[in-house]
Length: 406
Image (cartoon, rainbow, N blue to C red; front, top):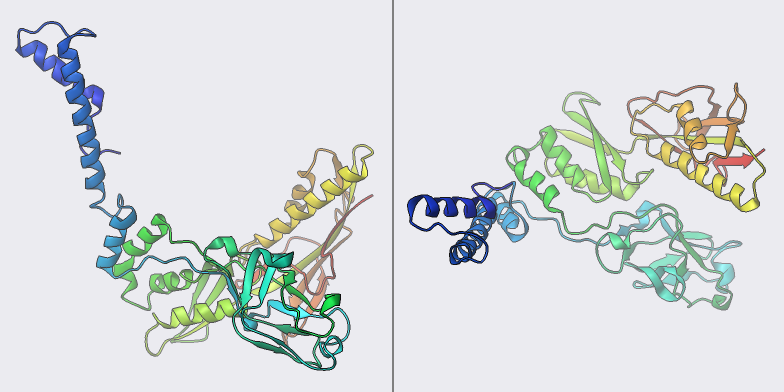
């Protein structure tokens, strides 16, 4: 929206009217000298207005872009967040080397395996596709069958982010049975903390809230500190959760689960803005798992390919619904049913009228939090204030969401 500008048509009309009203010139038809001169002047003035509006807009935070916005950040002591690579620490227990049978010693003549720093791990064979490298040397003990490593993407930005189980190839061959390819690698969870250069919109938000933020220990300062950590989608702030002088932050990650590394990064960021005497605690939500089994009946006989496509799409729809639930958001069985039925017009029904799903289970952490206890879910479920429902991938077997044809 222009501040003071007039359109070229407005400028042209005003000049022509002034000339015709104030002079003896009466001809302004196409091809006349009057029209040509006025047209040239109005074009130039129109460009001047546009340039003036553009430059004037850069003088305000709302209209500033690029280096002009960076100038605002410099004045307020807020630096634009740059590109960062995607990372996973060994403490996250995410990227691991493993063997399908036996131990590392069995594939290396009884000795441990030394994975050097710089070993390439990738999504495609031969070190191609999205590439990561190990950032520290790691010893895979001869008696172990799996070992976690710290990795970082080659290059910066979100192009290095990968989904679960995408890192399946490595270039390490210095072990006895390397010709058999018996040393495997995988990532057990998404790695999505690679970030591009901060957008203008996000940067403007941080600059606009800088005055409040620098006061420290207020809700906004804590929220901005937590959200500045790549991989954090949102937080739930709980003041006085453990008594006076305490507060808890529950992280909602961009992935279904919250890694230990993400918790550590947010804890460090929040500690920098918390006041002396205030004890913050950053943690993941209590992850309540869900699994289900459902039987689909179709309106007609389907080909094998049609059945496969419908089942795969329905499974994806159900998984996305469960994993997108927010902290403390209610789980609604009817919504699951509608997600399945909306997958294809060829689906006649799911299960029976009284029992749409053959099995529907809930997995809650035990008191010792070293396992989960399974219970049957027969209706909607309202979680506690710090619970978050996810698809149960650990205790529900290989296919936690199992949809099949009748």
